[in-house]
Length: 259
Image (spheres, rainbow, N blue to C red):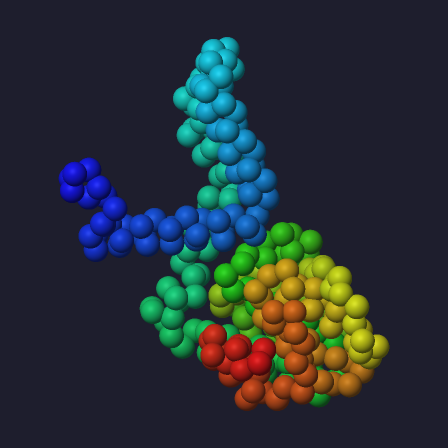
């Protein structure tokens, strides 16, 4: 009797394996959530559901067709998902925990460059919006702008948002220590905004922070204020030091902002 119910009392190895597999599936879903591949994955799951239904109902023709399809499914998946797989593998190296383990100063350096650029743009009364990717991918928003692959620097950000730059009227998207897109279009918030002084940039920052976990820095050209949108909330009046702390300070700093 004990042997038959022994599986109900897993040892520490079983628990460790469950945690690792769950974490792996979670990371895969997070990576796919930022791409169009999630729709293809849902279609694949639908085919798997039809296959099990054909076995239950003894639908031999449908089962045979699906079995032949699945026989070459691995090769087909490599071809169809090739761009997403490449991006996912590259994105693994940019994972927040991975970056902190191997280069704990990188995130602070990026935060300092962004904060310096925001301060210089605010002094010059130049508007700007900078979205910093975290766990949820921003690939679909980057596709709406011009793709770049340049290291984050205050000088480059100032150049992009210069009024004479063709990319100034849009958002810059930062992934890791790189600027991956400029002139990107972000979704506007769908909720009513009571503060009528907020322009399109602030509404776009709120909209992106509502749909993703990104940190969105906004510089107002009218008031020269620096704001930060996170989790659907916009906080204003940031100086350089406070902005660096919010971007590089990790979860505790963000929790204080949202409190």
